Length: 114
Length: 116
Image (cartoon, rainbow over all chains, first blue to last red):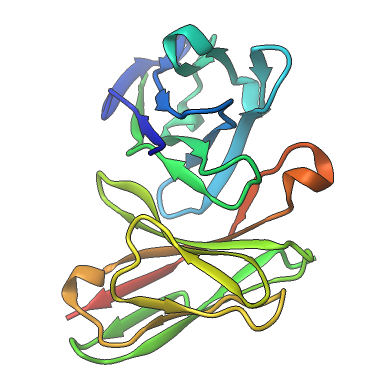
């Protein structure tokens, strides 16, 4: 069965420092991968997605993610974190090839210190 | 477009009561799904639908019923609420990969449900 693991429950980064959030997936076929962000009390916003092609994907708000098939990973990165990036981040994999639904990881909470 | 709308925003139920969470989308998406979000658990798929008249179970379907009589609406029913169903519920819709070569889920704002 498909699954997503986000090894870090909580990460604190200084403002201006770089960020990497880890995501590992388990999926039998070519995975479709997503990163969502959720600010406190808010809904979910799509940061970026990977379907095929270039393994380095650019998203909104200066985020990028790299798909590494050999490591079953899809880590999210940002070169310089802003205080407004403090939120919960979810990695997800498509439940199937058609796009019916998503399987989510348990999330990583990002705190930004000044 | 209003996107994905959910009602109510908040609800408090007593154990054993029933209720329906409403979800509607105006994007003509074929796929719709329901998730619940609990602290430390991420979002878990409850039920999903690939079109009017077709539904299937997700990861945590017990205690919930769904039906899809129209493309636009996908209500979630709790027949006999339990405290374990206290959660935030998100509805989502998606176009198909067949249509555009990729897809993404569009999420509603959520319903916060408390069962006492």
